[in-house]
Length: 301
Image (tube, helix red, strand yellow):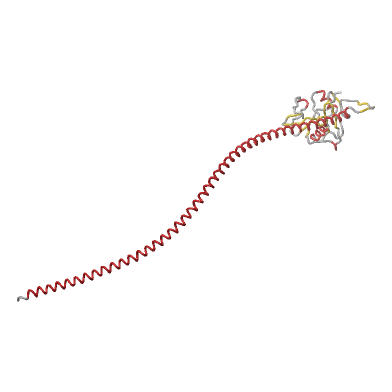
């Protein structure tokens, strides 16, 4: 009975010892586990650190290469930038020179424009003067031609009005074949029927002789014309310078017949007057064919 408590104590002691031993074993295992884990993590981190260090070194090398390249690129860009700056300075100088030349050119263009305007004005003035000179030349040429014509006419007049007779030139108011009355000359064309003309053609023939169809201005001349309107077989009468226009009798000199007793027949358009021997004037179609009487001023001698 006295041992039981000791045995219990011993058992408890053993039990505690066992527990202590187990705890010790657990602690030892835990220690070794901790050491093992520490070693493992130490090795793991060491390996990672070595890899990271290696990677960092590689990155550093790469970065150094990149920095070197960037440095070279920066140097190149700096050199190019310096070249561009010099080029820009040169271009600025060139632009300034060109601007100055442009201003000078503008001034020259303005001067040339003024000179061109002046030359244009001078050209216009010269053209105007040339036109005036051309007109004067034409006028002088026309005057010379007229003078030559007048000389020719004068020579013809001298020959016609002043023929040479017995080696002497004798002048008369009318040329041969023309009748002289008052201050005029007349030619009576008492043509055969085959040679008779219409009023218009008869007038053209008179004009070719520097005369025109007779215009009668007074009773004395009217009587002279009537008396010299020769009677010829096949001849109705002689054209004079009177025809109907706008139902009025009008002379070829533009005046109208005022003495109605000289022509009693109506003024029908397309009709002209003829003089008939010992009769009053008669109205016939201007297209008929008749003789004609030309008239022109006599030569003063």
